[in-house]
Length: 172
Image (cartoon, rainbow, N blue to C red; front, side):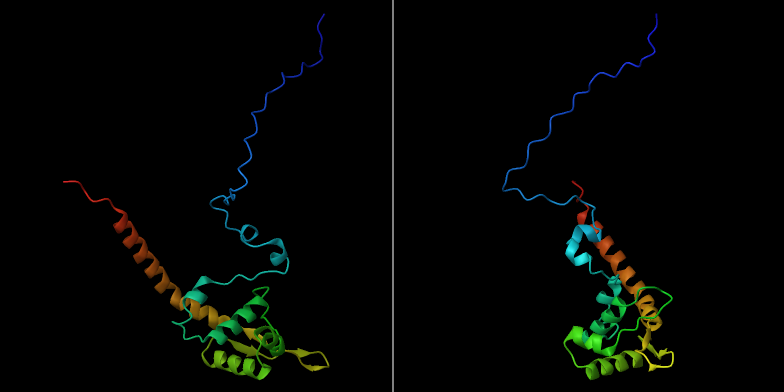
């Protein structure tokens, strides 16, 4: 007589768990994990973060950006949530965050506009008059695109230099 009841597989033996590290050992992060969650605490990330092109930081001097002008650009970028909508923080908001007067921020915005980094775009509330300006960042993007090849060339030169330095000398 046959029994159609399935036979359970034999119990598997799990390998023993590795011993815990000594208390004086600090665990190292796994290589290759470079996402924001691995870099920043949750409490920091919960408030949001902005994507900043490295070339903006590397090329600050090359693009003739004063430190406060760069800070104003970073403040504008932090308000640029979608590509199709210009950022539009109030001058007072930027001033408060930078510990400056609104008039100082207005002067920095004027310099950034004269240098071609931004264009102010007037915004109006329906039946209520003018709202805070929007800031078109296409000039900044164009300037970053213009200096990007220089940084690529430097990176390639550094890579070749490192490779050359790492080559073992031939034994004669």
